Amino acid sequence: MKKYVLILMAVMLLAAVSAVYSADFEDSTVPGLNMTTDIDAAFNASQSESKPVVIIFDQESCVYCDMLKEQVLSNADVQKELNGNYIVLMVDVNKNPDFAAKYDVVGTPIIKFVDSNGKLIDGIDGFVGSDEFIKELKEI
Image (cartoon, rainbow, N blue to C red):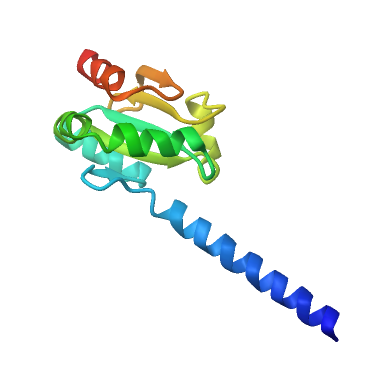
């Protein structure tokens, strides 16, 4: 009987830990950054506002994705440029594998700059610092 109680407790603990990590990933927003996880809404906004889309391909347990959010996307200058001139779309590659494949995404973080029809303009593969990110944004 003790064996079953221990197994049950271990399963409950794993479920609780998993729920915490999933909840953290679900809340992948960056305070101060206007972004969406809705692909259709992003492209509709891009067309109506005549702004390109910045697609940030992300996934759970990606250290460099977290660094991008904390060090780059949280930067006030980056946010000013993104919020003013782009539609920002955060895409979980595991939940949207077909969409990620469309842009040849094989790792994360990957950032793609596309027009309102989804045509590729430019991209950044991997983590870059705020200065390089802003430079790239201003060249688009």
